[in-house]
Length: 401
Image (tube, rainbow, N blue to C red; front, side, top):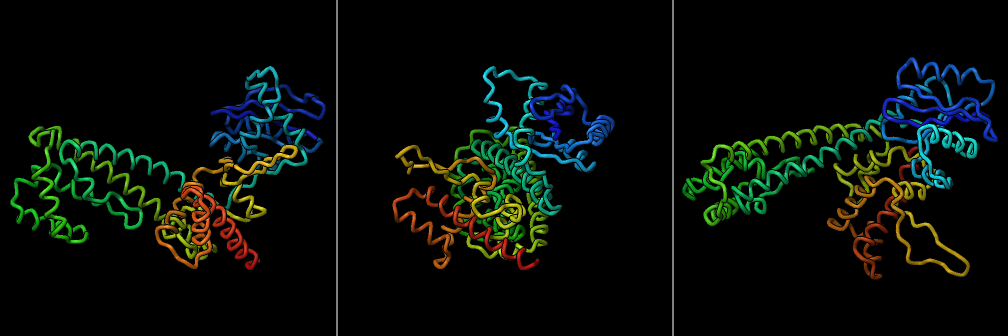
């Protein structure tokens, strides 16, 4: 029984090798994340005439080279949740922290949890790719929000009130009416220099070209807003047009990237057996289906629906002491925040587009009728939704076997 604790950092790691009862096989030493150092470490571990288990914390992407290399060499590698390791470390009264101390603590963790540690299993290629795409989609969505804020900030100077008239980028149709309009009419002066009739004519032509609804009433409302609005930056200032058009360009580039990533996610999700089942669930459309599958991954790695709920961090553990039984408990949030967010979006869609025969919709309505806050009722609905998701998708893979 040999436990190898690896404290992973960016580009390098500290390794400590222990046997039971604190017997030191090798004092902590540093290795770089290059083939030479990792090859020497793997060769040393494979020479031991005893069972070897490698233990490391999950550290974003920094642990992946070490994990991948050692698993390819046939070694058992366990990747521990950082929170669990933090709780384990808290037993030390002195609270000392160095890379060498941490590697020894991780090795000790491996000895104490030898029989309960699970070997790390990589996700299926499709699920892994979906998860990576989902992470990048969230990143570019943050950029989209920032870029949109910058554009609307500039429009408050040049076209105050215009944002309320035109919709921004929509995930469903992947169009951004606001940026398309501002690309053509970037300042109220570009509208008021025309007669109302001429602007309406140009607006209708623009709407037809961009495949938007050709509404004459909308054109009249925008023209009236332009006549009444008070721009605080002049259209004659050269920098103003440059800043607005550049803000539009950046926003369109981000939106184009989001569209490409979402298309790829949809393509991958449709190749999975569970796609049609997930797509048919209440509140799940073409956009949310790949997002849900990306965040949940392969349901076969969960032993039950409760495990999936815990993975999302919406489980409510019991709290009892003596004769006291806690009743006003909150969700743990010890899970995947991205899954909670996508799940909440799904619950909002269920309430916005109700299907009276949908069990999740009925459950949300029931909880609201009992006096639950709308947000709490949706979280309760998400709990039920994930149980149904697990049961239906697991059934598919059972039938395939």
